[in-house]
Length: 136
Image (cartoon, rainbow, N blue to C red; front, top):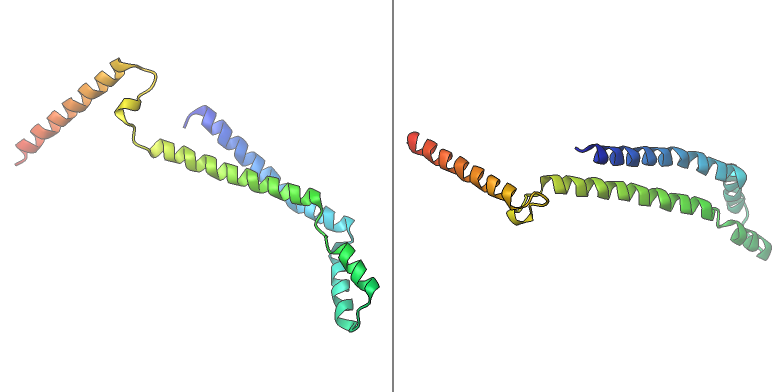
């Protein structure tokens, strides 16, 4: 693994861990700011005890039903995108490292390197063929 890839992978890991570590704190702060879980428990108990509903209760319920703020949704979407991006990066990196190299796609070195590789491959094939003949 090259140092650049290692650095990118380390950076993705650190960002994912930092993002996932901050999500619970943000969620707790969001719940504390809006009254917390206790408020929702009390509402559920009141709804069970009350058999009749009025227009005022319905309007209060409608105004407080959107408990998830937009900042929390944006943070969750950003964390999901970061996580999926890291997974995609790792999958693509592993696929490229395992993929076979086609002879025509040798890059950078030119034809001299390709000729050398072809010569070596032929020499190995010839040596293997002679070895098989000896072991008959």
